[in-house]
Amino acid sequence: MIFFVGLVLLQVCGIIEGASIPAVRCPHPCVSVEQCPEANEVVMKSESRRTAAETNMLRRVFCGFQDDQVKVCCEMLKTFKHRNLALLPQHCGFIDKNRIEGGQGANINEFPWMALISIRMKDGNIAFACGGTVISDRYVLTAAHCVQTMKGAPRAVVGVRVGEHDLSGPYDCQGGVDNAPLVCAEAVQDFGYEEIKVHENYTNDGKIWRHDIALIRLKKKVNFEPKNAKPICLPTSLEQQTRDLDFLTATIPGWGQTETMLESNVLMKADILVHPRDDCALFYEAKNVPTRFRTSTSTFICAGVIGKDSCRRDSGGPLMVPGTHSGFNRYIQYGIVSFGPSECGGDRPSLYTDVVMHMPWILDHLRP
Ligand SMILES: *[C@@H]1O[C@H](CO)[C@@H](O)[C@H](O)[C@H]1NC(C)=O
Image (cartoon, rainbow, N blue to C red):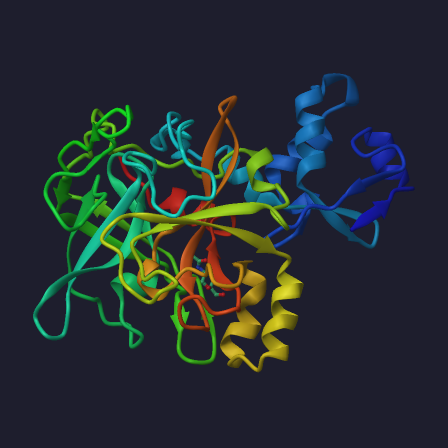
């Protein structure tokens, strides 16, 4: 959406000038500048005292007008200045240059932030029933439905494993034939947890379904020395948060069932396309998908292609899009595998918890 600006106030302030400025998609309330101290402070400065960076910042969070009032996506500014931002590592989301484009199996150490969550099932057996991502040396990000039942009771989480590649054996190696170097993964790291925080407004009652996000605080710090244990980047900068993901290719690694309906022991990956939310809603409506999925699309990222959908057992895993982080091209986690209305490999796109929308919540709940 483009707003044509002819507003005296803005031009006087020198913030929004020229023919047009795109309004950003704001996953939070879009509020008037006056209700946003972080923005108002800059608007109130005289033009000569305002830096180019400050003007740029205001333009990035501009989300529309109400009457003659400029509105801004204030939460994005708060995230960008959040007191806990330093708890998220700068060295994150490293992209393996030797990765196989379009391949199905992941390389060893290609996605070292992948975590497996072990849960005691009803039959007493313990299974790696969900995925998650290492976002700092102490926290794993996952979906709320991985750690809580539909009725709101906690699920019996046993622990978290980091650094896994092939579940079938203790020694994970690749290569060693045809001049390919032999690469073996280092030992996995297993953790107990200290605390599980589920989003206060997580709802999955058959009608509404939203805020499918949770944080697991590990009992010990993850050792980031081995190559198979590193953190993923989250969208923290304004640039990353205001990015339009529509029609971009996202990567979803996971151990979940593949298109052949078999569970995989080896970490797999798939590239899928992000769809505009409105397209997704229309698609669901046309396919007569239950209402809770249709009405939820605006708060989720919608992505998928025929035959490459993420399956339920991938729940809690990441949807990642490469982007600039601290000046480098890195994987940034934009989504959490939440729920798909179809079985594996169906033609319906799946919904992913919107990480940008939940950045304030994530940051609020981190502790050193
Ligand atoms: C949960 O919902 C209530 C009511 O809409 C809201 O006031 C509160 O801020 C929400 N909590 C979070 C963490 O978003």
